[in-house]
Length: 197
Image 1 (spheres, rainbow, N blue to C red):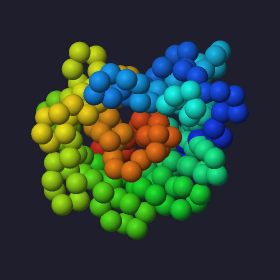
Image 2 (cartoon, helix red, strand yellow):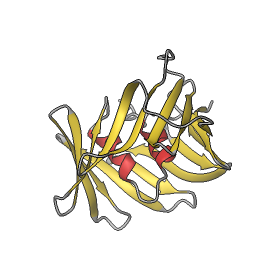
Image 3 (cartoon, rainbow, N blue to C red):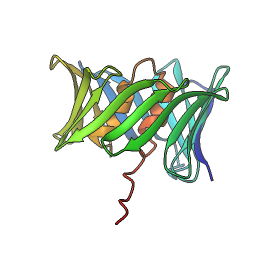
Image 4 (spheres, one colour):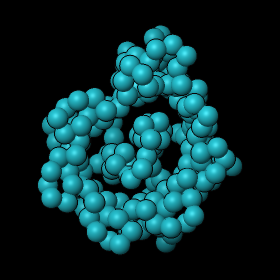
């Protein structure tokens, strides 16, 4: 059984901030980079809006199992959860990213099966390493938000919402579009697999 999250067509009307934000990504200077939330009277979990500015935004459709989809311009994105909990992000039916849980954390691969990143939690800090093992970013929850820094301790951004430090780092994967970031930020990461006795 595969469950998914779908991003629907970009807004036909001018994009606007959601009335009830679930997640906000802000740059190091505090400016809004991305917001995902509920619009109008629709405060259910199924349809969400994403917004990056007055010219770019749209709607996400969450499907059962905590995944979904979206469409922007000529691109249709789907984030599906496999029966084992792993996630697969497709763009126009072509595999773009995979996210799976291993004993040492999350593994992210590209559509060709090559490693993109590994995200591991050590205490209160989540760290994202590149395919060669180099540290790319770290995230820690502080003061009601998640702070993300690079390997030189420079702030990359801040996230608010009910996100773990581990999930927050997904927004900082290389070469993601805003709608891909939105899909990843509102979809629970693969859970740790139960250890058999």
